[in-house]
Image: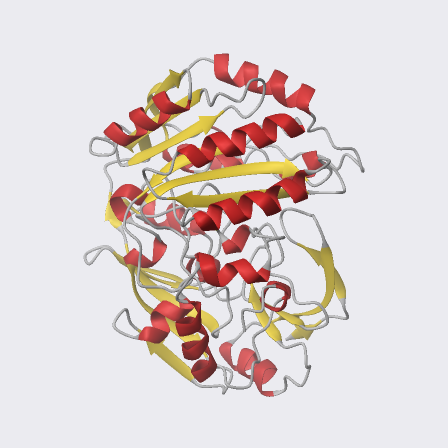
Amino acid sequence: MLITDPVLVSGWGRNFSSLSKRASIATIEQLQEVVAQAGDSRGLLPVGLHRSYGDSALNSGGVLIDLSALNGIDIDPVAHTAIVGAGVTIRELERAALLRSLFPPVVPGTGFVTMGGAVAADIHGKSHHKTGSFSQCVNWIKILLSSGEIVQLFPSDEEFWATVGGLGLTGIILELELNLRQVSSNSADVKEIRVKDLSAMIELLGRSDKDYEHTVAWIDLSGDYRGRGIVSLGNYGSEPVKIRGGGSSGPSLPSIGGANFITPLTVKAFNELWFRKPLKHGTVVLNKYMHPLDGVNNWNRIYGDSGFLQYQFVIDEGREEIFEKLFAGLRSLKAASFLGVLKKFGQETPAPLSFPRPGWTLTLDYPTTVPGLERFLQGFDEELVAARGRIYLIKDARVSHSLVPLMYPEIEKWRTIRSTMDPTGLWQSDQARRLHLC
């Protein structure tokens, strides 16, 4: 076991950092020792690969517990299940499962998410309209409580759903069992379609749900902001494809110093090229289709030292007019985003803090240096709440704590369950303090 002196840590958005100690554990016994000896008033927080964008995986003045050593994978090819350690990544599970013609039913846009993080964020993917979020394929979770007790939680337990989407604040996830789905090959059959505006995009996504397991759209948020883009529709493929380079991840973006290369001019030029690029139509490598964010390693560096915000929200069907309000405000600020993603969600879970629910979800990336952006988003937050919308907490770095109970009306239920699981308030994070979650 190794506990470091305080080190500087940041989220994936690199928009702010914090100092905390870091504990690397090799066994469950070492983990129990760290918990038993925790005397720091700033508490403990389990962490994975720091792919959350804001401050949910930061714990200023406290201890971050690195769970990467909990990396066991045990697949039952007959039952189509896998028991995995909290430190296993989506990418590692996919590789192991594909050897047995199996695949996780729910994967996000990056493969660099750990199993513990997948539960704590209740992640979702392009298949949400069919499969729901990650917790829908989880059979049980084993967690370490602040008392040092190890308990196994099932979907019939309210503590299970408090842990799902619970941002690591109910206990340390040790391992879990999830269902896998059978696949014929390592490929996906993909069809991309250009659309001229937002209404055409929404119409196409809506009528494609029944025929495609994976649906998503890239939306052009630059120029005249009318919402043109490319809709991507996919199903699991039947024909295997050869993977070049042994399936390694893409090239790495080098450190570019303090410069921010995301400006209205560069984004407009990039988006024009992206909109006009040749469309995919046919068989592609499954992992590459599932994880477009992994095409370039360290892509977050392109925003420079000031970092960026990722803003993701969900709104009910029938409330699409809020998109036009958003686009008008961004147009007036000349705030251009080269990463705009629109998806349709299916059913929600019983988890009080889980983000997905039926409706439309839009994701945007913006440099923190855009003049007036924060003031505009504060106003838009209010409009979002008035329209019964909510933001994804695992990606948040800025929302007012007063709006969280309005976005997540069952938060008091979550707080009550959490207090029974962690009566001493051992599990802490910068986000939990900022949003008064605990």
